[in-house]
Length: 438
Image (cartoon, rainbow, N blue to C red; front, side, top):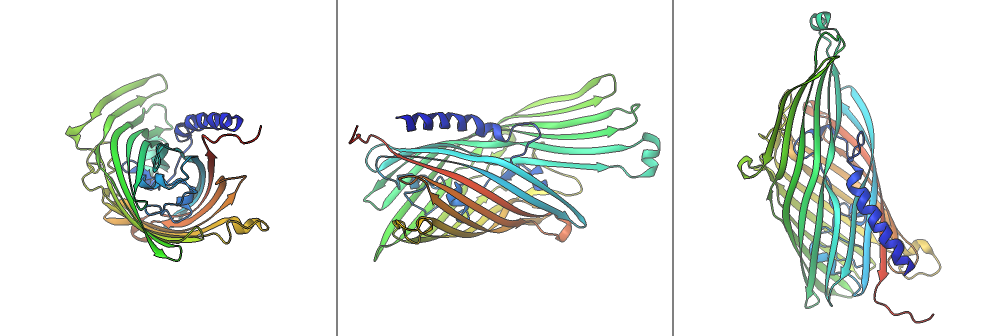
């Protein structure tokens, strides 16, 4: 009972901390100049298990790990097991554009999920995970001597921060020991702030401050299925598919303009626009398919494909989400190709601890949901990971590394090279089990 008391305290602590992780002033859940468009940088869904497998999980039905990528996967579990998963990620990025270079480090908590059985072959899960993150800070100085000779130094600064989260509750059931189906109800919520400043060193000129406060809300649903086919000699093939519905975005878009002098702050514009059907602003749906081959709990290999069409999201034309200027963003179709491999040398080895660990490697290639000046923004990378068994049952500590690149140096784009470190905590307990000894 004492272990469960600590677990409940931990759950409450995590539920409080996760929404706050990306909302503290000056901190970023993600940092990228590409996040200036739309909802920012879309998070790669999944726990540390998925992230260390190249982001795969649509066909995964590993009973030792929570898999939130497919609602049907919640049924892969011991019948009386309570499971929980949460994790943290630290990312280091080097940016380059022509001869300009800079770097940024970020830290974030990326998910918290609990799962429990319902009846026989059915189970549920509840969780919260980031959907997108906004983070950038760009500063320029006016260098034209004909201008600053009259006005003094002028500094232009634009920055953005905030996150959109998805809170979900889902369930699944298995039929005939082979076919699993599941569904999730998802609620999007979050705040995104985009600020633009024009500051004059000469106090006789008024500085300008403007920006958007984007309040994002929305409901959607996600459906999934998995089918497991025995191939003989403890070999199995698992086919998986998911489909997430697109949804109209609710909330508010606030636009403001302020004129600042040494004496007063004068509000020039304050507009509060309600998001609804009339503005045609949408969060795109997603289709995913996957296939997995495995030999018992010895090894597995998985291949996934995901596609999401954002061309009718409305973000190209809606104020606060669109970006026009020297460079133009436009919404597009995002695609993702992922592969992952896992091996456990000997899960029951009692002499050598490292043989009981699960080792993983993965790879991915992705196209973003936007284009920059008509050019696709692609990313690719390799992932590595290991799960270290802790105590009894399926408790474990998952460590993962993601090494990748987004963008390129052609056509004046920004190239990002990054290394991410992921730590996931896998919690497992058997409920409703009578004590044998006092």
